[in-house]
Amino acid sequence: MTTSEPFSIIGSISSRVIMLYYRPSPDDLEQMFSGSARREALDGSPCVVLEGEGKASPVVFSIWLDTQRGYAARRWQDHFNGQVIRQTDVSYQQDPAHGWVPAAWKNVNYARTGELRRSEEATVTE
Image 1 (cartoon, rainbow, N blue to C red):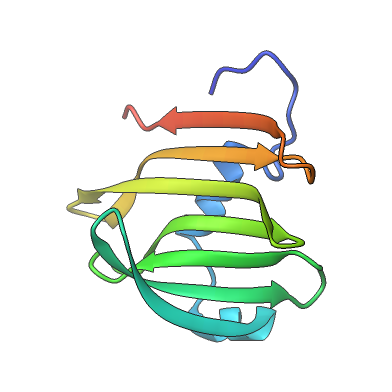
Image 2: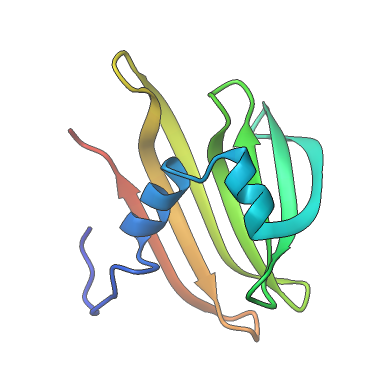
């Protein structure tokens, strides 16, 4: 990643995608949030969308899990007062040894006013 401003690894574009890839099991997710689920397509791929409110935060999240790619997390949105404040979109490629692995991703952060704060994109090259 190339950037002109300092960043924290916690919440950075790299760590968020890693956390999505190594996401908790469904049992762990149930412990972490209370919410609902629905089915919805994302870029033509069927997904299960989990929506919920964190038990320790007023932020509401939505996560799209791709049912054709081993329930890989394709999109994660955080909402505050009904407005998207952060969105991460991930594309995957098939790896013979590891299954579906992240190939590229984009992370966008907005201020609570809706103003764009930061947009980052990354691509796996090796």
